[in-house]
Length: 441
Picture (cartoon, rainbow, N blue to C red):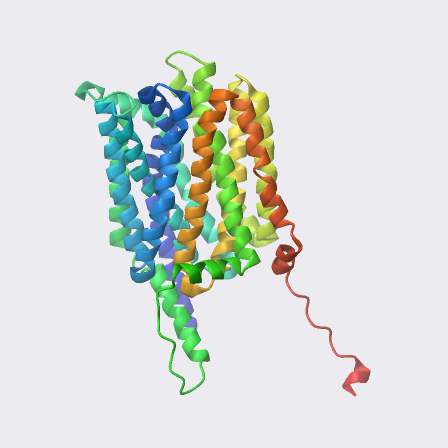
């Protein structure tokens, strides 16, 4: 048994390293696309009201691709599901590039819809890191993969302008060029996972669970046949668990607040600053935001294992509220906008790492992959709605009102986290008292 456990530990270590490497590569492309998406949409459509739809199209694409991707994973493992998402994201990046050359709004949104599959791949990678992790280290293992995005994501927004200029001599506009490099980063990430993510962590964890169930089975009893869980079975399993419900709500509402404020920040900067430095300022602010999202993820993961999932989620909500208050008061001050976006990233990290860890351990193995796809679908659709509405809110009422509305969106999560049923489910049962001496006699 000790040899088996040591083998599993080596596989887990290798799995996390491969996932981290893919996250670094793909993070470069994802961050570049997100950082200029709203500006690109505003340039092609001519209105800020539609600029948020570019982000929303990418988020919806990521959300919807999570379902077929996790269905593929439930049959064949993490490797083909995640790699397929990256390849679809490659097609999306090419579509965005083509939309700029053709000045086509519809093609732009289709491109961003497909581009969002790259984000779906990145999100599913965090669950792959938790498949074989020991319970007391699950938060840290998951957070390492989240953290790996930092290197590529920090460089991405700042590389958008120089990479765009690199392709200008070939007739490709400044804001279109980065999407050629986005496509390349997704192809490299897919190839890396296909070649090196072996053995597949989901297939191995499932076989371990089935072996344990067979060992505990009644002698002579036939094992239950392996079946693909239906959508109804998945939803019943999720809704039956207060912990799973909180984990899903934490990810969905944290993502909603983050996307709503973040997607309109470039437009707000563009409205309050002018000149050739606008793209540089957007890159700096979004790089700081991405650092907040990912750079301290290992600390958030350590806290998740150390002080508990619930406290980390509530801490994330407190940071989101502080971020919204700072953004509402920032006006045209780039320093305050930067502080707000860093706090926004930190709050997102708390709700994402805490919520993902809680959700990953709160659903049965038989429905795990598909439940994670449903969770990412809910999270993506919530954020997509936020991104779509954010452009309209900014157009009608301004960035300050958007920040205040985003703060109000955290209230349902706070209420769910503090419900007695949720607190009871997350509170360890007290050990039974030792029998009294008189009773023993």
